[in-house]
Image (cartoon, rainbow, N blue to C red):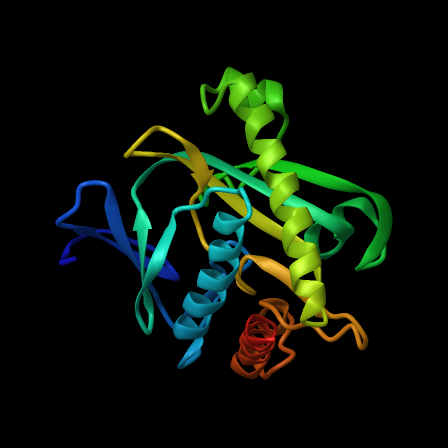
Length: 240
């Protein structure tokens, strides 16, 4: 597989074409952004950690009935992925209410609830990712009702699988942001972006220590060390 021209250069990732029209290469940067790109920093080694953590979690989903874009690790900071047509929605699954959602609702950070919450947002930095519902998504032409029903089902299944898997590593999955796209090879709707401490809240089950991007958001330090803790724990349960 040969890496071709760069087709996307985002804040935290780049995407390159390959000599296979249905495959691309994702390259993870060491850059971290938060609060709609207002806060920005570089942490050496973070890109490689995101790459390997996401590879483990996406591969686990692929093997358990939830299709993703991930194919294989391609390098220390790169992975080979299926090419997709982006569905411009963020699908956020909440197992606890934390972060900006807690602030909006006037609840304590980490509020426990008995149901699984799925929050739908337009994936747009310019619009600050506004919250919408299914009717608005369909009205805007972003998706159909049937596609949304399928996406919600896949999001719930992914959440159930990863909640149990991460618990084996002593990590509680608080929430995660999923993105979906239509695969260019067969049109299948698949998870089409990383799942990592950059896109999820992951807390130590015993201590409640945050092992995710909140360490950067709230100046808690040890960002790379926390991500490395997540990777080491995942590697340990893979080998067990």
